[in-house]
Image (cartoon, rainbow, N blue to C red):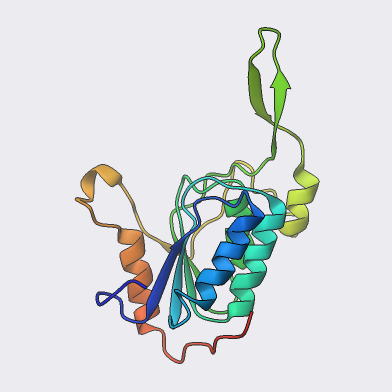
Length: 181
């Protein structure tokens, strides 16, 4: 819970979507630590993950039913971008921040002659585009619903995305009833 500066609001940062364990932790947090929250801030800033994990998280957010603000920026990439795209426009969900990186292609490893390995994008558009209704997000990204500039060197410890999200959720009237997961 965010505390007295944002009463009734919960916050969770999904650092990555690489492991099914993330889904288990997310579900537990929604039930327990964030169970009393009337609104959720879900931080998607940073690197991505895997398709099965992003699909499961998307289902949990929709099934939860509480208003949610998803924080995105120009470093939000891969599976987190697809998650943001899938949830954008859903009832009670707002994307706050900056356009995502536009780096959604799956990566694969190539063994080089000197023993090193290089990670390169592979042409796996079809699986991703099934989740985005045919939209190719590569090089384009996902635009937020509410743009908030975030330039770290000039913030003095503030987080304008989080501030905007808590302001939005604090003014939300008639919050949706929470559904059981």
